[in-house]
Length: 326
Image (cartoon, rainbow, N blue to C red; front, side):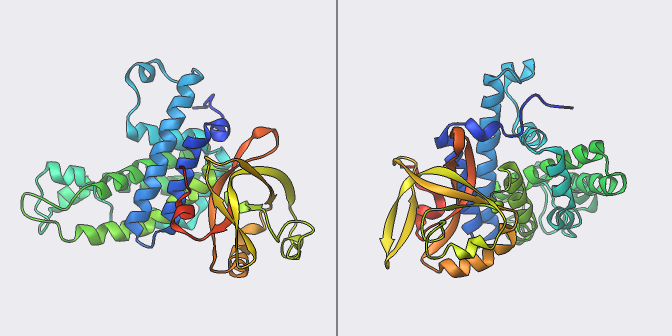
């Protein structure tokens, strides 16, 4: 079903809401623990589908029943991926090794909601209950296999829907504790880590696709700018420069400028360099920038006040890793 909602619906959403979403994504990227990373990523998705619902309501894109009754979280996540990912992005996502590994994961994702409603004994889960609890994972595996064989828009839509459903199960699982009527499920924490390890790159790929590949953009405010001492590092790449404005300030550390993101502050001028070649260049750029910088996503205003999400090298600190909203 074709949607009247544009894929770039988020471009003109309020800066505070968009920055909160990006901050959660930065937090997810910074986590070493897979469960904590996925938890932060799901917080970003939750804010995204809430903002999408508001956009659709403002613009008359909702079905009458959704206007009256709202929309459930699972359906909201499905709608987020259905609307925001263009057909070629859905194909690219399904072609990724990340989705392939999650669909084929030997450790089947079981819904702890179903397990708990059955008052399961964590030391002896019947095969029939395991099968029923892992139904969403099986549905993704089957839909993904069908898409691999058919490669049609219809099979892609079905696979994306089943991917959203499984990710929502994972979201619910990591929100649940380990207590059961027969004692704690001591293996749940281990299962959650292994499942989130597989889900994490899928969620990162979805975030990147939703925001039109920030991995291809870098906001520059210092020595990498055209005419500055280190511009030769980017001059080797084929790309385009655009004027940009980003809220925050620049501080000097060891004689070098360091950006601090803060949406409550005035805008500063910068330039955004965009090229697909950046996707292979990040390790070299990270090494060049050094340990006093960290690469994060920020929201930048480009020509015509269009908002976009881009990478930037900022001052390494807790405040900038998640973005300051104060």
